[in-house]
Structure formats: structure tokens, C-alpha cells
Amino acid sequence: MAKKDIAVQEEAGLPAEFLNEMALDAGAGSEEITTDDLAIPFLRVLQKMSPQLSKREAEYIEGATDGDIINTVTGQLWECSDEKDPAKITIIPVDFKFKVMEWWPRNSKQGSGLVSSYTRNDELPTHSKIEVEGKMKTMTDKGTELIDTAEHYVLLVHPDGMMEQALIAMSSTQLGASRKWNSLIKQKLISTANGPVPAPSFSHMYTLGTAYKSNDDGEWSVFTISDAGRVENIDVYRAAKAFNMSVTSGDVIVKHTQEKPAESVM
Image (cartoon, rainbow, N blue to C red; front, side, top):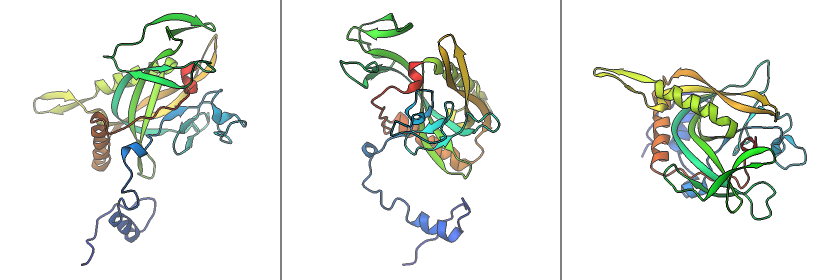
């Protein structure tokens, strides 16, 4: 029986015949991969203390600078710190979750890494605000730290049209950017015959970048978010919507690293 032709948009300069054959083989080789076998990438801002900047660390990336953004799974680096031509990343927000993450402090003798995470409705461990090394932190009775964390699930849209799922976790000094982004999302409306209605978050695109901040304690880098207009490609919109459905249904599993990201300790 002859194979049925599949219409595939040309991308990355590949011949249509090649793309059609790839489409006919869709999913081959990954049939046994489940959500338990996947790790959703994080997009992180590199800080001065990030291991990617130290030649002594296995994660070292030559040429990486604080202020750049990295994909924690693929290792792709965006040179957002370049003052003359900073990299810009096009993203579509598909879902948002607020969490309180419980971590063991760095170099703790009692434990290491992530202890647990809590939603707004969960009861938190007994805790109090105390000064640690000159900074006010929320510490539990057993010595772990509680950190407010904004989780933004996004769909990356690469210049060549490829799409990729990712998660941006913002905490500490990054929370201001998170609140600004959520405000931009909530302001979007769609006109209907019955009047304006709230737009789905995945109907609009944003540009992700970084900027430097400083105070008496030092200098660090934060995410920046700017409006990039509506999603105009129906396939991109449907991909973002599908990712939203996966997140809200609980199919997307987030595997946090065993060590606090550098930006959460500023």
C-alpha cells in the first residue's frame, strides 16, 4: 500500500521530500519514552557564582558571562549580556504556578538540595524571619530555607520556527519581573460580539532578556520581559495550547535540581 503524503511546511532549508519522509516517521524511536523519562528544561540567568562560569566546574561553558541565559537540558546559551547585540528569546507563556520551595542551605551539614515544595493552599512548616549572613531569610525550625518561587511554563519559538517547552523559575530579586509579566498577561483582551474577554496567556508572545541590578550587597542579573505581539501562526498557537493542557492536567513533571540556582541566593 502506498504511503500517504503528508503536507509539511518547509523549515531550516530542508527539501520538502526529506521533511515529508521525516513526518511519516514521526515518533519513531521514542515509543517507550514516558513523562517519567523526561526533564523539562529550565531557562536560567547565569550569575557570577554560576558553575558555568568557573573553569573548575564540569558545567563550565567557555565564553559564558553573567547575564547570559542557559537552557539547563540542551546547554544552549543566549548571550544576553552582549551590550552591542544582546540575544533575545521569543517565548509564549502557557501556565503559571506559585510555589514555596524548601531548600537546605548551601554547605549545610544536615542535608542538601530540595526538601519539598508547597502551593498556596498547603500548610508550611513552622518558620520565622531571621537574619543570616546579613540578609533576612525565611527559615524553618529544622534549619531549611523557604523561598517564594514563581514558575512560568513557556513555549520557546526559535528563529527557524522550531518550538521547545521550558520552565522559568523566578525567586528572590527575580519576583519583580514575574509580577510585571503577570500584569502584562492579565491586561490582554480579545474583542468578541459580547464585548472584550480575557485573552488566553498563550495567545501572545514576549521577548525574554536580562539586565543588571545592584545594591549595597553587590551586582546580579535579572530577567526582563517585553511584549512581542500576538501569536499569528495557528500551529504555534495550537502547540502552546497543547502544552498548557499538559501542564494543567499534571502530565508535565518538574525535576528541580538538587542545588539552589545561583539567582535564588542573591
